[in-house]
Each structure stands twice: as structure tokens, then as C-alpha cells.
Length: 61
Image (tube, rainbow, N blue to C red; front, side, top):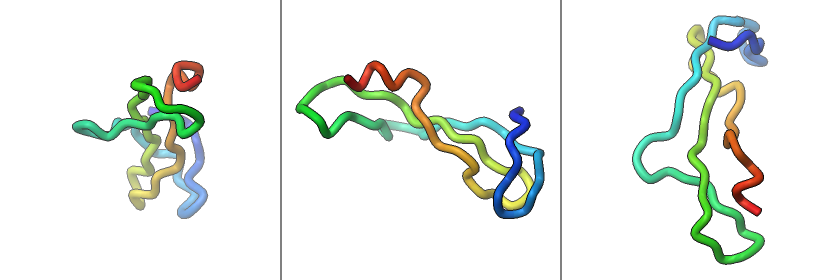
């Protein structure tokens, strides 16, 4: 659970989630096998994705 406020409905009731099977982010700066899984904060009231992020962006350098 996270205390971030939903910009759509104002609820602070949310849950953390991750993108499933082979959905990774990689840098477009250079060809690299480095990749990171996407994480989300999702509003439990309306389903809005409040935030999407990678936990260790430095790995994409």
C-alpha cells in the first residue's frame, strides 16, 4: 500500500503491482541487454495507474 493520491478520483487507497511476463524497459541510448521490470501504483477505487517506474534506473545506463 502506498499513500499517493489518485489524480483522477482523489482516493488514497491503492496497491503496488508489477508488469507481467517479459514486459521490461530498456534504454534507447545504446544497444544493451540491460533491462528493468516496470512497477506500478494503481488506484483501487477507479483503476487509474497513479505512477509507473523502474526500481533501479541506474541499471539502464
